[in-house]
Length: 113
Length: 109
Image (cartoon, helix red, strand yellow):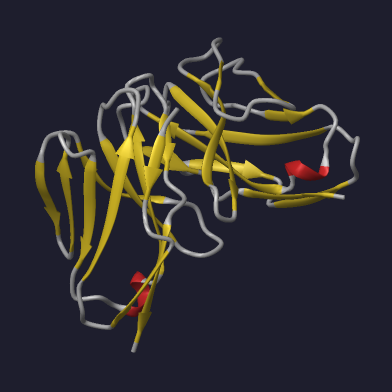
């Protein structure tokens, strides 16, 4: 692993199903973030984590949950997917909370039908 | 809330210069970032300004005026590979970045 990885690359999901998007970084960064990117709206923060064991809500947290059991992993869970959650999801990490450059994963394209 | 504005689209000719403006109104300020994003790919870091003035990095430069809530990204000697979206993002001091919607730059031959 080099940098930050996400899985799956893409997924088609039936509405009402549960889905976990995975994110792993090997840079030992303290802070991690989940964004969704929709046409015309740019990147919007869903949840973030300042350090292992802590999480916080971003701009659009409803319908999503996260956990941060260790430094490297930051999964995003959709408990019951809805069509409005169709989007491209990016995970990111940074060495210092908020103040440093954020490194982005390759993204997960999610379609909820 | 946070308000970050940048033009939706810009078109320029190969070899020319393009300036992408970004204005912001945020609850706090702890630096402004510019990211480049090619279609279907992840954003990648271009520049960071926290003090007023111009930061130059090769063909790309970024300017910040905190009193005016204004920044611009200057792309010189445009190349076809510079066709991408350019994202302005503000660290508002509470450990999170707020992004503008992005400016799609198309470079024509």
